[in-house]
Structure formats: structure tokens, C-alpha cells
Image (cartoon, rainbow, N blue to C red):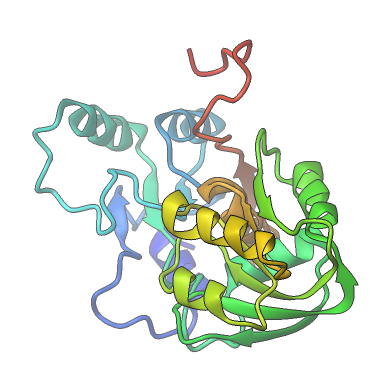
Length: 269
């Protein structure tokens, strides 16, 4: 099986339209596909580790050159030039799996499935009108503090920010993993008690929740970082690919969080 055939079978019949960021970023798709690496962020470090492992294909969720479509307008940037050289020199095919993961034709996108499964959040999930955002109605009420504790148990997160009425049980959660649109509109809904997301504008959302709690409303917010709020979906992808293609070796590569939170943490220095 070639890499091209592997990607085609992985994507199946999901229609993401012509303008999609799910494209091959580098490499020869006609090469044989024997080892596949999966990661959340295609950082320089994860690309290097996947290459050293011997991957033929590296599947990433987010952009590799800091632009949603991975365009070439800024290829004269010295960091982007170094990144593209690293990618080409790796010999691997690097493919972005984003729109297919969030495909609107699915009842529930892969990322949300992975996050809810990893956190053990069980209940009814409904799609909203805001892209990859969902409303989760829990089978059993849970406090945001308890969910907060669970995020620290499984996502390798160094820091999850919380604000609002975190000790009041909730049943209605806005699951907005990553950075989807419409956060302010969803948060304002009376039936949304907790929002879980990756990145926010603090003055627009965090301060809104802080004041809402002051006024006695059961409203809270968990900000998990972008990697922390979508990693579970890519872990789930790796697990599914290993079942879908048993003849191909697959491995998930952890990209770690982008920020340092402990002054003694010198992993990236």
C-alpha cells in the first residue's frame, strides 16, 4: 500500500469541499506505507522524532508553518525556511488531518469523541451552529472542579485555567475544543453552565464568566490550551488507524504543551 492509498482509505467518503487544509505538505505519496506516526502538532521536535522512528507518513492536526492553509507567502521567513527544509529532508510524507476530523457531515467529530471519551464525560451530545462546537448534556451532574481534576490526570497538561462557579454541579457543557468560533454567543446561553475550550480572549470570556458567577449564575469556564483540548482526538485517531490498517505500524508522538509553567522546567530551553 502506498501513502496515497493509505490517506484515501483513511479519509473515506467524507466530503470536506475543495478548499481544505487537509493536504500533503511534503514528501512522495507513492512511497510504500509501512509505518505511520500521528501527532497533534507537527513541531520541529516531533518531526525529528518521527523521522528517527522511521515513519513513512506523519499525520498532524494543526498547521506546520503557522498559517491555516500552510501557504507559501512567508517562505522567506528564516524560521519557516528552516522548518520546510527539516520537513523535506525528513523524507516522510507529512499530511494534515484537520477538516476530516471536524467534518460537519459527522454527527460527532473525531476530536470531540476523543476528548469526551478520555475524560469519561458521558451523555447526549448535540451539534451547534458554530462549527466544531457541541452541547453535552451529562447523564449525571458533575462539578467543573471534578472535570478539571480529570484533565490533569490524562492530558499531560501543566496548567488548566478555571474561572466561575466551579464547585456547583453542571449538566450542560459547551464542548468547544480547539478554538472554534461563536464562543461568546454559546457562553451567553442560559442553558450553558460550563464551557470547555482551548484558547480564549480573556477580557471577552473569562471576565464575563467571573462576573456571571458573582451575580449568582451557575457559569464556569475551563481553558485547557489548544493542544490539551484536542490531543484526545488524535490519540483516538491513532488507535482507530491501528485497527483499520493492522498491517501498518502506527504510533502516537506526544508534542507536549507549548508553554512552560514551572520556572524549573527547562525541557524547551
